[in-house]
Each structure stands twice: as C-alpha cells, then as structure tokens.
Image 1: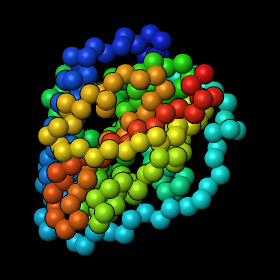
Image 2: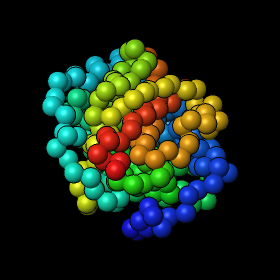
Image 3: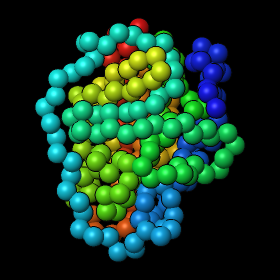
Length: 224
C-alpha cells in the first residue's frame, strides 16, 4: 500500500519510536542461520566465514543528481561494494516482532521517513544476513573481522519513482542485540538521515549476538 507523502505523515512520537525499536530488536536478536529470524531450516553448524565483499573505487554520482521529491524507495545500491538489492515496504503498525518475510530483499520501515528532499524523519532499512552468504545484507558484513564492509565516505543510492537520492555513510556502530532498542541515537528523527540495520554473526557459529548499524546522511543537494 503506498505510503503518504512525508509532508502529510505525522511524526512518530518518542514512545512509538521506542515501540518500533523494541519490535526491530526482537527480530534482530534471534540467533539462527539467518539473522532477524529463528533457526528455521537453516543449518546449525556454520561453515567457514565467507570472504568479505571486494571493494571498488567508483565515481561519485551525487554531484550529477538533481533533488527529487520524497517517495517510497524501490532499490538500494552501494557502488563501492557492488551491492544492489530491491527494497520493499514493511509497516510496523502494532507488531511486536518485525520479521522480514524474505531473505533476498531489503525492507523499508514505512512508518518512518521517505527518501527525498525536504524530509524531516530518518529512513530505516533492515534486512537479513546469513551464516553462509545466502541473504541480502551478507555483502555488508565481514564475519571474520566482526565488522561491516560499509565504510564512512561510501555512497549509498536509493532509487525511487521520482529519481535517485544519494547518501554518504558517516558512521557505523556495533551493538549488543539486547541493547539496540535503548540506543537513542539509532532511533532519532533526523532530517535527511538513512539508517541501515542488520545482524552480525560470529565467525564460526550460527549465532548473531550483535547488530550492525550504518548511518548515512543525504548529500547536500538531495536534502534541499
């Protein structure tokens, strides 16, 4: 269902944001073969950690992009990692657990912000990682080093029906799964901000005790 334009969307209260945070962390906290969900049919003994995504030197696209009106995201790319994935809306509503229904898509939390110029709320993207390279956000994780391959300065591009919005990664953090809901800076409403959240598996076990959070800010022209 299409989300309303950002200008007409009521800003979520701190209480609703905390409820959303608790919902997300409930799903993100579950250990198993795929981050964000239970064990299911995924293997219980992890293979060796897959190789981290290869990085590339790429030309920045932000200077060539014109500002676009807010709209639902349809695709996200991180050119430095050759990462490219579809985005599907996922409403929170009154859910107590957020469980992305597929492992090969990125999900946009449609109760929060829209990408585009003039928005006043954070855009949240969440998705699965796996123990053996079968989930959408696996390229963003270096299991061997217990960190993310996405680095400050990397460009993140969000495609919408109105055009492409460029963001630049400004910081990454790792948080214990049980603490994510209480990390205030993750859940703040920040104009022009993008937050990507996924799980971080241990290098040699199908256990994901931590979450990785990637913070990005819209390029100046995209936020105008």
